[in-house]
Image (cartoon, rainbow, N blue to C red; front, top):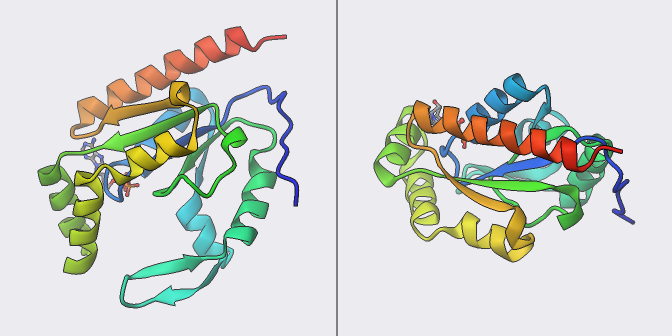
Length: 180
Ligand code: DAT
């Protein structure tokens, strides 16, 4: 399978990644609202289109069917203009994205959000460790060009709003630089 994309997309694709609870979905929705880009919630697509090989009770998570997922997303992303929201970033072809945002939250904010969500202790511990060890940030740096990876603090609503403003400015500049 060849993941070569139309590199002439007229709008960029943005990946919003980070540990669960850092604010990916909320921020992506705000970006979509502010820019007109379309939010693609990968977790929802995995569930609704059954792009998984079953559910792992112990880890309270689905085992991805990566081939099926990539095929599905390839089609969605090929024209650009998408804000893709997912907690891992290394499974996607590098060429898909023009900007990779890694959301970061401090441990107390993250802990409270996961408790509110009703995550079990194991999942909370796992995600806390993931955030403390900067797993997603490091993975993003290993998977994408350094100039497109941006770490953003997401502790407060003000943080989210200023993050969305930054994306808006970035998008305006992208449009100018890529106009034909
Ligand atoms: P994710 O998609 O990364 O799992 P989310 O957007 O669903 O995270 O957010 C989880 C909860 O935390 C949700 O109730 C909104 C809240 N939240 C997220 N980021 C926040 C922020 N920067 N300030 C305040 N609340 C935030």
